[in-house]
Image 1 (cartoon, helix red, strand yellow):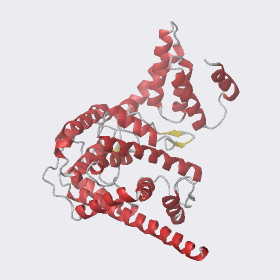
Image 2: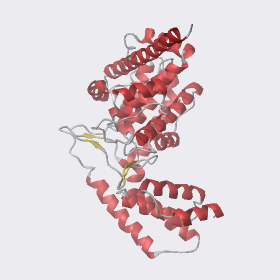
Image 3: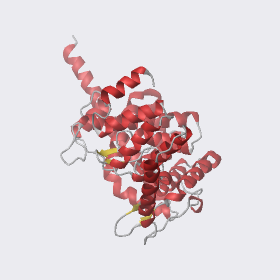
Image 4: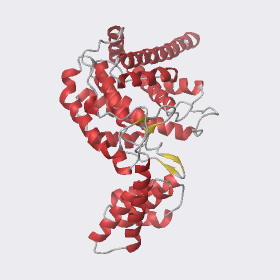
Amino acid sequence: MAPHDRDEMLRDGDAGTVPDLVRRYEKMHALYPQLPYFTARLGDLFRYMGSEALAVVFYTKAKDDLYELGDDDDVLNNLVLELGMQALTVATSFVAGPYHQTWRATALHDFPSILPLPDGHEDFRREWLAIRRSDPEMVQMYTRKLVIDSNYLEGIFRLTDESVNDIIRKGVAEGRADCESVSSITDPVKAKAILNDMLSVYDVIFEIADKQRPIHKDLLCKLHRQFMDTCRFVADNCYVASGITRSETLRTSIIRGEYPIQLCPYADVDKELVYICNYTNANMQLKWKNPFAAASWLHLVLVRCHPFEDGNGRLSRMIASLPLLQNGYPPISLSLSLQEEYHRAIGKAYFGDHGPLAAVFLKGMQESLAVVQALFYAAFVSILTLKEIWLP
């Protein structure tokens, strides 16, 4: 190890919160992947936070690395075997159901090639293109509103109305981030970190669309890891695996409720994710004559594949925004008031009717832009008023 890294570990060691420890050992593991100690220590932390299957992944790697160094550890070997069996038992216990709606493979979801474009799309497109050319700040404001609303949809946190408007107008760094009393997160610093994580990913989404880059499983894992960097620490003793698919964490996910819905079995997640990416790269440029149809199809298959333990709705809206962005529309933005309509539309898309989902995408974008324009022009008028007061 480099002397300064050794000094850091001797000085800080296991001091700090659990998120601090995870980030410290992740840093050391990235710098020294050949050292089993850091790998095994991450396994300990993930096990403590209740992610046994993820702990097994790291314990197994530590065991293999130790073997490569010509050593062996019976305790570690037994731990891998014991925890591995426990994780597999838990994972398979949820697979059988029963389900009101069973999993349907991506290949069985027909692309809605004859879906008509939603009413009002062309006027909205012209308006957005004009804004992109003349008012780049309004584009940034739209994206800031989008990431706030996306966290609202998933119940991550709730800000006061004043804070929402402040962040949309001024940006995350300068805006206030006062959380409502009912918010699951009340720390303004953490709320801002979550917003910045998502904004950094939308920068990548805009770049992928502009340069028409292909998507692939590793890219989606990277994007997921990036926007979940803060969100993965649900609590000191609860962790959501970021950038690692359910095929690795052996996590069975279902949509619970009166009518349970089966999502992709964990064993098939990686295969389905590769299929979605390959199909998109090979065919979508030919079929993006209706980008709303492409967005609806992409969103459906990704959200029902549910490749990660959490964050799948956010990821699906990000990736489903690509055909829209490449055809002169903004990324998908949905306010909390549209949540019920949005969820019903996903259910209809599952049965082949993509019209409602395409319509709610356009409706959400129109509503978000209207809010942003009102805030933008209100600030502009205020500046003009101040100039009239103070300038001779």
